[in-house]
Amino acid sequence: MCGRFVITSPPAALRQIFGYAEQPNFPPRYNIAPTQPIPVVMLENGGRHFRLMRWGLVPAWVKDPRKFSLLINARSETVREKPAFKNAIKRRRCLIPADGYYEWQDSSGRKRPFFIHRRDGKPVGFAALAETWMGPNGEEVDSVAIVTAPASRDLAALHHRVPVTIAPDEFERWLDGRANDADDVMVLLTGPAEGEFAWHEISTRVKAPKPKATRKAAAAPEDEGQGSLF
Image 1 (cartoon, one colour):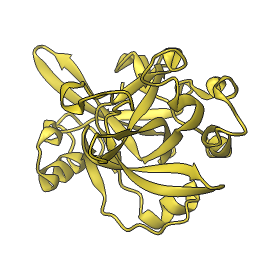
Image 2: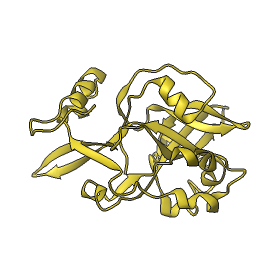
Image 3: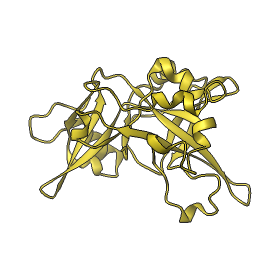
Image 4: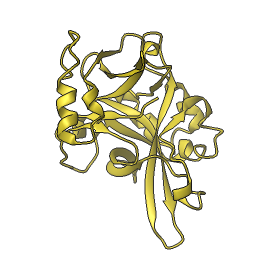
């Protein structure tokens, strides 16, 4: 699954990779959590655009979001059948820029955090699905969920599910719901190939809510001979 992730690449570099028209400026984020606003790339009016959406999808048919459990992940195997995702996979596919994500493992009653990233250090585009919820008074909430898939044999050592990452040469195919229907893009919804990602253990301080503490944790692994996060 994916419950926390990281964006550290410079905004200009991400804009070049993802090809959106806007020029947003935002600081590095070392511990992005559900319910927070996150960068999303969508295809609108024939071009790619940068948007901010809440992480945790709320389907359009929900009557009261306060009574609905937010959907932070969508299983690739069931996105075409689940009521929460079956419309979004057809018309509202998007990408979430990231530089890696976290997983925790239980070890003798202790949660051990690991940072997972591309072995070559390049940013990734998480496959995601978006929805817009409209309230009775005209209020709108744009929200998003990250698509996950079964992990490859190496990544399964950390968790049996992983975020789906879309290769840059497949961005257009994934984003363009008019030219490519849900059946056309299902082949893209697989986990990274074995050996494509690397990981290492980091400090448990990454769970701290304060940004400065989280950044310090991300730069300082546990005292077990680990390398630095970046």
